[in-house]
Image (cartoon, rainbow, N blue to C red; front, side, top):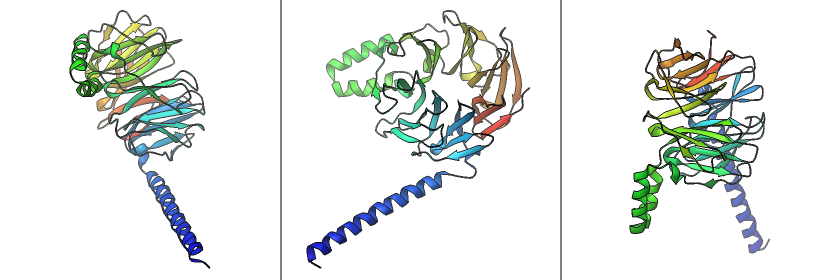
Length: 338
């Protein structure tokens, strides 16, 4: 055998061993993601996927519920904050390090679409209008859009949601120091915490500093609404013809779907409210920190249903049987209907 042939075989063997080692390491990492107690660790969101539920949380954990919860692998160890399904099969989840993952089989397997440690901001929510068009939002005004199902994501900057004094400040800074302008620009917008569909193409987005903004063109442009409360708002729900927004220290507000006049709802506790779900009788069931579960009737009366000690509840969803599940710092928990 010639020396050149021997060298070729040696190089191929080394490459093969390197690739095999990398593949084994990756498979081992994915296997280690599956943990027996993962469903009892921090879970941050639950969404319906046909007759199943899909949940996501810390360390890239994802779970599928069909009669029982099953953990599935994802291609990331980043904390996943929100999950959304446009159909029973197609869904996306977002999280820290500007991570976006996608599933085509109802959450059983996931593929990475976007991730960047350089962005160093978490996505906090997402919404898809159809299987191709969607948006992802997050901290410090993080906002990305896709028109091809997430194969490509484009950054958008919504200056219309800045305070007037910040707009003037940025204009002055841009003329003086371009690098500093770009750096400051990335930190002046409030956190975008939640975006939901109100009707047709109308969207509602809530966030930090009492942000309540409305879009009538699928989020291409936004109009900031006057709002009396200046604290953070974390979620929003539509119940019949009413819209609710909720946030820090038990602040919950109700409006008609015209979103012009807001009425504050008095709660029996001052715990931060993180999420809600509309029940069959037009009741809004809320969950929040300190394990609170609160019902708000159509006439605005609030009642504390349960308080789960040592728990912070951040999401709620109902499964195919109508049973309610909550997610939080102690994982996924089925709650009794009361």
